[in-house]
Image 1 (cartoon, rainbow, N blue to C red):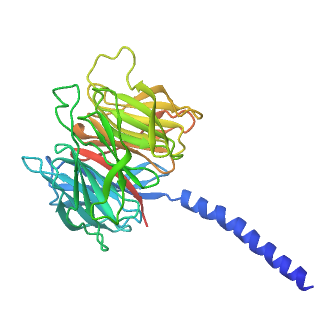
Image 2 (cartoon, rainbow, N blue to C red; image 1 turned 90 degrees about the horizontal axis):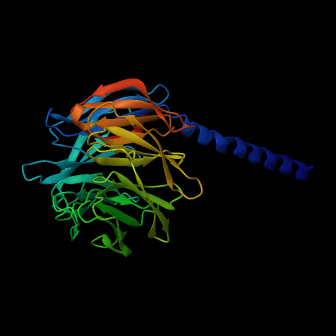
Image 3 (cartoon, rainbow, N blue to C red; image 1 turned 45 degrees about the horizontal axis):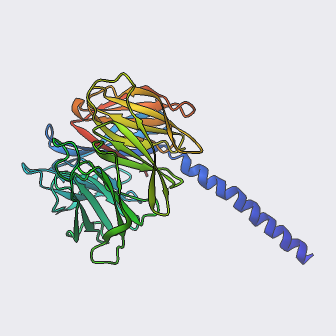
Length: 386
C-alpha cells in the first residue's frame, strides 16, 4: 500500500512539473507591453531620451516620459533586469563625450539620472554592458578606441579604467585615414568583446577578464580583416553562436563569417543593393529575426530602405529577397520585437520612428500605420513593462 502511495505521489509531482514548465515558457512569450526607449541627438530639442509604451499585440505606441538636460544620448544599453539605462553622450565642438546612467521605473516608464563619466575617447557612438554587469564599454568613433568603465553596485558608472587604441588606416583616404571604432559587442558567451572599425577595415577581438585592473587584453585571434574599403560598422551573432554577420557602411555589403573556437572564418560577401544600383551608400544597422530565418539591414544614402535577406538553414549564408522603404530619411538603428511580429526603425533626418509588421513566413514587411515624431532618433531599445 505504501509503495502504491509513493508511486502515485511521484506521478503527481511529475505531472505538475510537466504542466509548469511549458506554462512558464508560454507566460514569458505572452508579455504584451514593453517600454520603448529612444536615444536621440538633441540638436532640435532639450529632451534627449523619450519613452513610449509599446503594445506588442497591436504594434501601437503611446508616449510615457522623457529626460531633460542630457546632450546627445544617441546610443543606449539596458540592464538585463530592466532597471538601469546607459547612454553615450556625444557632445561639444570637439565631439568630446561621456556616458550617463539612469534608474528606470518599469511601471511608470520614468527615467532618473544617476551620474555621468568621461569616456576619454572622442565621439562615443556605441555602448555595451558586460554579461556579468561589472563593466560597460563604448566604441569611440572619432578617437578610434574602446573605453572600459566599471559599474558600481548601485548602477552608477565608475571612472575609466582602460582605453584601448586601434591603430592603422585603409584604402579610402577621405574616410579611412585613421581608426574609427564603430561598435563594441560581446560574443554570446560573454568572454570576447569585438569592435568593428570603419577606418581600418578590421573586426578587433579582446579577451574580457573583469578581475584584472584593465579588463581587456588582446584575444588569440586579435583581429579579422574585412575587404579593403568596405568600412565595417555593426555586426550580429546568430543564436547558435556559429555565424557572425558584419555590415559594411561604405560599400553596403554584408560579410558572413563562421564562428568556432573563438575564431572567425570568411564565408560570403553579399550586396545590399540590386545589380543596377548607382546611388550613394550609407549602410547602418543589422539584426536577425529571433527565429534566425531572416536578416535585416538598413541602408541610408539615396535609398533609405530596410533590406531583407533569407538565411540558409544549413550554411548560414544569405539570399537577398527584397527591401522596404523606411518611409523616412537616414534610417539608423532598428529593432525587431521579442515576438518577431514587428520591426521598428528610427529615421534620423526625418525625425520619426515607423512601425512595420513582419510576415514570419516570408520575412517581408508592411507598414503598420503607426509612427511617432521625435527629433533626430538614433537608437531604439525595449524592456518589458511591469
